[in-house]
Length: 308
Image (cartoon, rainbow, N blue to C red; front, side):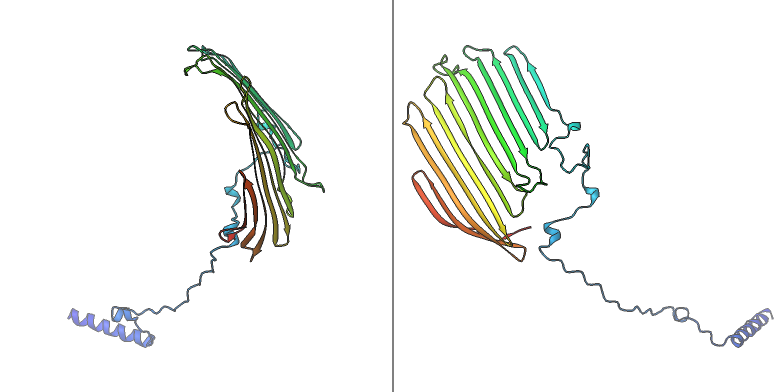
């Protein structure tokens, strides 16, 4: 009896619900246990063209977070000095003493000024003999000068001038040879001068020259090597005209060998051309001579060069 009553109630409820909303449809996944889902096809975004050589590759940019900070005393200055006095020591004095070195000292001083710097160095050593004839004395010194023209002037802005001179004197004996009492007074030195301007765009140059010398005070030995180098470049639109030159002269005098003099030089004018702002082609001619022989030949780059 109870079953009949429950079935009747369910039948009446289903009929009543269909009369209220006869259009209700059950989803497929309820009826069949599965559902078909359709997804609209969307075209993928094509990547941008990445060339093999690009401006970003040749001239990469860096985020400010990757760059280091520099501290200067006055950031508003148009010209920053070569040295920052807040983080630089102008010089030092060093003195040493020991059982076999008495004394041993050195002095070094740097004097910075507007757009230039002057530096000097000197040292000395007196080594006492730890075995017979092993004593030694050494004196050496150096002087450097550098000055750069301001970049806001009209005549040769940014030109740098530099001078350098070094000399050392070494007195010793051949204590480990068959003639241990034989003395040697050796002098070695060099001097150079440079004029350079790599700041200007239309015309840059680098001229330098100097000499190296070695000689003995008590013997007939003297060697001198003189040299001069020159480089210049003139830019005319996309064409560069370059000149490179070098000269060397050696003078040697000894007791065992005849007096010898040798010269060598080379001179190379070239012209370079930029193509498509990426490729440079360069060619020219080379004139050279040395040791009594001459060589004149066409000069060209072995491969095309990619430039920044």
